[in-house]
Length: 174
Image (cartoon, rainbow, N blue to C red; front, top):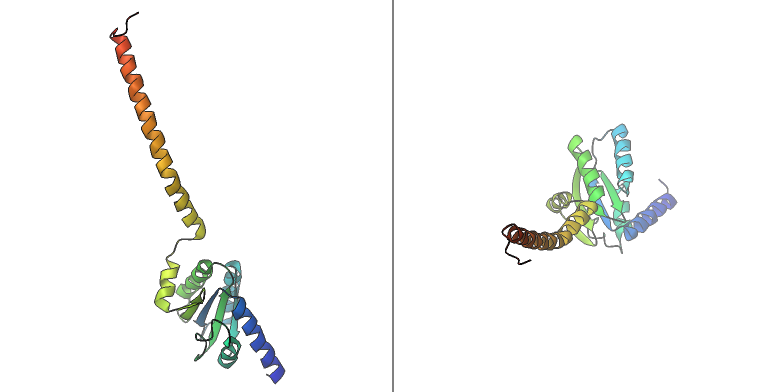
């Protein structure tokens, strides 16, 4: 690879890392090319980007970005999965692929400027999606109103029952 190509890749990595809200560092050793293409499709569907990088170029490209500490001392085959939006769909897509391919593993990550370890990535995977969280919030907001409506309805039903019973027993003068 020529010096100009390396400089261009370093700048591309720097641009990607400076825009990314979330970066996952991955080990893809012994992953067949056909499966790698499938992974790239899944990452794109989750709203992310996936790229294989040389460790030295990744380290140089990370200088001056939030991912600098994360990419300082990489060893072995390295890939980066990046997203500028919600990290949960990307993490779930990568995790699903990792379950099917034991050679594909997480090394570390950077989520919203904070370096996260593999156990923290696992915790991130257990989070519900944005839509599920919004549904839970709406349910919780609607519950008190529903309880008030049920209580008012019960009082009215009780009052109607008492008045009906009084009419049946001729308690009201005519």
